[in-house]
Image (cartoon, rainbow, N blue to C red; front, side, top):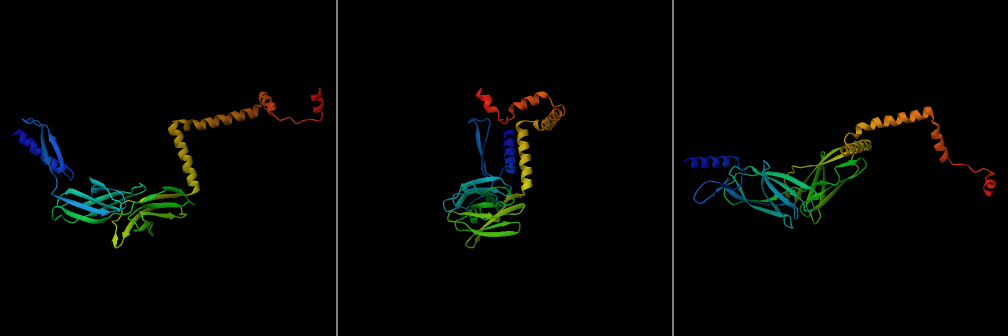
Length: 285
């Protein structure tokens, strides 16, 4: 009787707290056959998801709560298939993370799904947004910013930032690139959407953030970064530096006031001697 109560309690707790996928658990119960393996399936139906992003991209699928479900790699044409996803009838939807094969950019997007009506249903033709990345996340006024990523080959890519939209075309490999010339100081958030034929990609959830600063700000940041690096390598040295400068200044002031003779003797040895007209006769003897 105690064993039955224990088993039901564990199964009920697992059903409530386990993510939406099948699991196999082993409970060390004493029996004639040793350990007992219990298969607990959490979910109602299996579905398949198909879509496309860019050739050979890595695609991860998660729940809307960002719980991992599965992953795959798109083929050479950019298409991917994820099958046997176990979900419940009221499953709300998926989130996708895609990274292009060159690892220069990333895209994140989510999609809600309608109520599942039958087992083995397929959600297909999901167009994921282009990946997006930056050559530099911090530049100085006067420099150009390079925004790039991957989508489907020959797709239209709409890059949006600060209430502006730039439309470009990806090449035969899916690669696109945009040069943001001489932007003024400020912060820019870039996102990208794809259009292939009459199909528009999902809305992107991620943005690439660019910081543009002035030259004085860059000098200040460089000095601050250098000081921080010195302090990390030699803890406490920045507190001693002002004292060292004060000591050197006092030492120079002391020598200037007292003018010790040994300093003049040392400096006189290194002082350049101008030749005189009778030096010729001195060296001849």
